[in-house]
Amino acid sequence: MAIFPGSAELAGVAVFARAPQPGTVKTRLIPALGAVGAARLQRRLTLHALAVAREAAIGSVTLWGAPDGRHRFFRALRRCGAVTVCRQSGGDLGARMAAAFAAHDGPLLLIGSDCPALQATHLAAAAGALLDERQGGNDAVFIPAEDGGYVLVGLRRPQPRLFEGVEWGSEQVMAQTRQRLSELALRWVELPTLWDVDRPADLARLATLEGFAAWIE
Image (cartoon, rainbow, N blue to C red; front, top):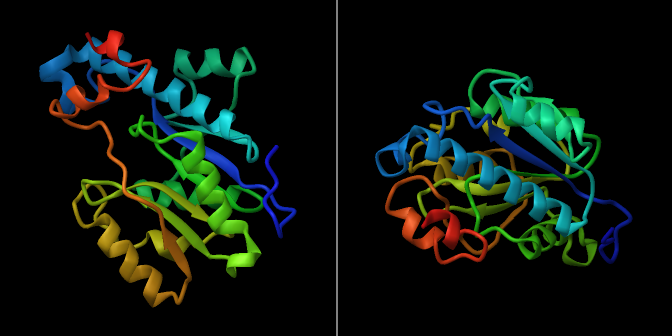
């Protein structure tokens, strides 16, 4: 486990992922990959996100599945002891993220499964920004996404109001979140922007990453 200077705390990592069910995930990629291919990519991206979280070694790793944890993919992960699987609960994405933070005792980083560019070094940097008291510490840390959202949010403690009044899925997510952070008088830091896989145009960039080129081809 990596322990950061000035703090005895560790940051857990929560991975949010949808079950790789054909026709229900990565729907904007179906024209390029087909329903089955898009589901296979979802499975591959989820496994990659879990591997990155474990490699970072900054705390416990949990997988939060949607719509629930009964899909055979989640059951297999639970059965082999690869990760603790929890069920996403609540209404919109914001409510579900708030619930995950509320369920965790201590600092937590939350990521999705859509950003294969996210590496263990990014998680370590995010945890460091959140926990290193030599920098004064921060209430929150974010890695923005090129599409206007974010691929990582980390909190020292639950902040349910942070996730209210946000147009999830829009290009305004990060901008609206900054507004909420200011309204709540929270101290936050943003790390360099990354990209995620959401549209067919993203597949060419995905193919340049190690471990994905042969799969995409």
